[in-house]
Every structure is written in C-alpha cells, then in structure tokens.
Amino acid sequence: MNPSWLTDWRWPAGIPQPNFLWPQFLWLLLVLPLLILLYVWLMRRKKKMAVRYASLSIVKEAMGKGPGWRRHVPPLLLLLALTLMLLASARPVAVVALPSNQQTIILAMDVSGSMRATDVEPNRLVAAQNAAKAFLTELPRNVKVGVVAFAGSAQVAQLPTVNREDLVTAIDRFQLQRATATGNAIVISLATLFPDAGIELQQLSFDRMRGTGRSLDQAPPKVNEFVPVAPGSYTSAAIIMLTDGQRTTGVDPLEAAKMAADRGVRVYTVGIGTVDGETIGFEGWSMRVKLDEATLKGIAQRTAADYFYAGTAADLKKVYETLSSRLTIEKKETEVSALFALAAAVLALLAGGLSMLWFNRIL
Image 1 (tube, rainbow, N blue to C red):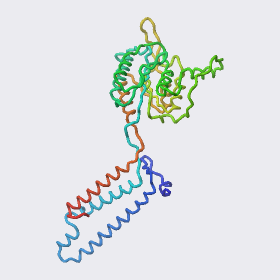
Image 2 (image 1 turned 180 degrees about the vertical axis):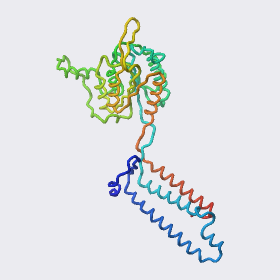
Image 3 (image 1 turned 120 degrees about the vertical axis):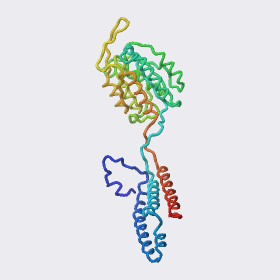
Image 4 (image 1 turned 30 degrees about the vertical axis):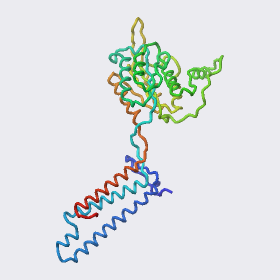
C-alpha cells in the first residue's frame, strides 16, 4: 500500500516528478532525521566530555584536529550516501535517452515531374537523393531501409535491406513521372513493412466506391484481421515520406495515414518546394505545383509523427539528420536504481577516505 502522502500531496509545477516502482520503501527516509538528531546529540556529548581534560592539547585532539568544518564533512557525505541507498531501494525510474529498437525504415520519395524544379539546388530531385544517401550513412548498420518511389503510382524501388550500396543504387535509378499519389506511397510502404497483412490498394478503392453507392463487379480483396493499436506504438519501423506537391491521384493520403496509425506506424512527412504554388514548365509542357502542407501535417499528426519543411538543400540535409537521431535514439522510462547505488558507494568511499586523511580513523 502506498503512503498516503505520496498520493495526496501535489508536486510543484515545472519540476519533473520522480517516480518509484516501490514507493512504500520511501518510508525508510524517516530514519534520516533521527540519524541527524543522534549525530547532534553525540557531538554535544563529546564536547561535554572534552572539558573534563586538563590539557588543552588533549581537548583539541578530543574535539578533532584542523578547522571545525572538517569533522562534519565525512558524516555529511555518509548521510547523503545513505539517502541515495534508501532511494535506490524504492527503485526509481527516469526518462533517459537510449538506443532505439527501430529495425526498419521506409523512405517514400516523390519522383513526380515537379521534382525537376531548380528552386532547391541543383534541383529538388538531386537534393532529395543526396540528402537520402547522407541519411543512410548516419543510420546504424543493423537498421534495414526500404525505398518506395511514387508519382502517379507507387512502386517498391528496393525492399528493406542493410546493404547500403543496393539502396544507393535504387535511389540513383529514380525516373521522373507525372502526377502525385501520396496516399498510394503510404499504403505501399505499409504493405512492404507488413508483407503478410494483405494490405492492398484495391481494398481502399473498394471501400471508396462502396461509400459512393456504385455497383461492384467483384468482391474486395481480403485483408487479414488485426486489432488497431495506439498511433505511434509500433516502434520497430517508421516511414519517411518526402514530397513537393499535393495529391493529384490515388487514394486519400489521410485514409492511408489512418491505416498507418491503426498499425502504430509513424509517418514522418517532409515537404520540399514552394508552399504558395508555382508554375513549372519543361519539355514543352507546364504544370502548377503547390505543396500541400496541411495534408502533410495531418498525416504526421494522425500517426504521432512530425512534419518538416525544407526550403533549401541545406535545410533538407538538416531534416534528415534530425530524423536520423530521432529514429536511432529514443527516450524511455528506465529504472535507475543502479545509478543511485553507484553514487551512494562513491560518497561512502569518499567519506571514509577523507576521515582517514584528516583524522586517521574511519568516521
């Protein structure tokens, strides 16, 4: 049963609240004031005993050599050591940064024609390719990476692998196409992460047609049953989607984001290009492109991830550096009893060492 003062008392706002697995052991801290009172009583008793000696030198020896503050340092250090040991017995936990158990990352990269634009030097596609390849070098070698390229459709350019050379080759092979299907990219990425889950684009198409009341000539593809989990709770994989435009075809990206959220997969979105919109022309045709930040933010928010905007090649590189550290290091609530015990041992040894140095005895 937890002490009532642990449940009724409110921790001051703005100060991190400690947490203990065995808070009932905190009752042992009540021993500390008693030890302090015992120390004060012993010091007073020692002083009374010392005045009985006739020799002043004997009195000084009885009271302790050197400055008066020295005789209090070892007991104080010992008291702190005991405090830490009692806290360690309550098994404290803290949020600490630890290596992530992220095993697979899918890079979903836009290869629509607008990626030829040169507002990001040398152009958006090359900047994205360079940033992605730099991202690969930052990841631990045991992390698998897959590549999905999308424009009017989405295809797996490289299945998840730890072979960085194969990934670089896949990224260098990108071919520009027309249209942008951001939703398809998420679905194909999920199908790559969960190859046995029966995730298919046709299922979303069937659901969308059924909602419009259209007649259907064939049954929908079967999707393996699963129980939805909390968004962002699947920590073994993540998707990073980079795009410079808004969806022009394919499934609704927010519907696809819901599929990812139900499976706990985070979808980090990266926007590159013009937010206000721009007309880009090449090879005898032109098109109007505009970055749909609202949808990209919605995808990230729905999947418990983050959205990043990169206006330049340097910005894009920084975004991937941030994602690299975020996906390989994560904060977890971890028991830190061993750290408390170690600190207590160090203080106890320091107390004994100073006592031997100053007074030739252990406390």
